[in-house]
Length: 343
Image (tube, rainbow, N blue to C red; front, side, top):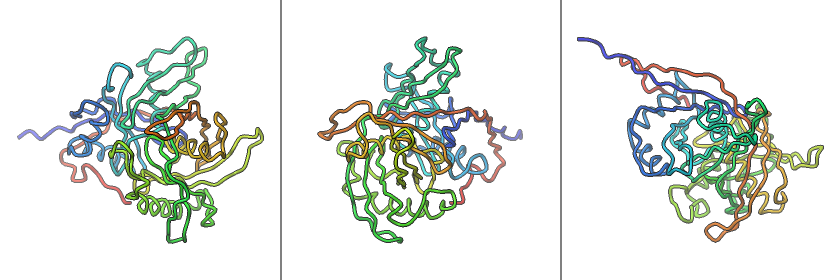
């Protein structure tokens, strides 16, 4: 009997401000659904699609903090592509750093032709709606930066009492394509620094699960967007030399993943909260740093009302860089397929 042949899966890898994004252009498994949101629901329940996520995210081909996406058709001709974002615990509804990476990839590969103006819009359908990667290029056509223009974002709840193992804290919830709890770590005597990673992850997970089923975390119209996706643990750094509001954060999302970037959709949620609370003027720039020292700049570019609530459209500026291309092999004799994670 001829033994079964290994199966290959190809990916293109980028990082955005230090956070990985593994692009799978051709997943090779059927992903059914009329819209990207429908395809996410299918992927969650389908063994083949979810198995591919695990294969590319879990060790030994990935790690517990891996992140990536399967490309899909868009919802209609108004967008260039669709994407299903994934991480070690499943499929997310929003991802700003992934949108930035996809914008760079789409221009660098020629999927979307460079606009002679120097600004090329790459329109992408994601589970939470339609977003744009506004890609800036120089005279030679090289990408120099990306504005992630997100779905309308809003402050949801303020000063919620949360009893943690470190004591009671006050947390806000804001939506930026997903719901984020957010709290100033000065309340518990922590700082956003690599030496505090274990404590920050533990606190972020705890706050997420304490608020996940709360009334404040329920989306008003689409239950698929309910729950707390992540916890943004931040510290205020005052104003920089140019007078811009400056903060540093560690975003703990899914079940204990720590974002290496300042978190794209999380930064959008911070813009919504800070604008609504009057700490940031409309159109003013937030300088937003990550735990590893990488940086996004963000601002609100439009006001609107969504589901009866005031909202803003945030634009988050960053850059992504290609780190490699891989062909992963699945050997049918391998007993560790799809893989494992240790947390």
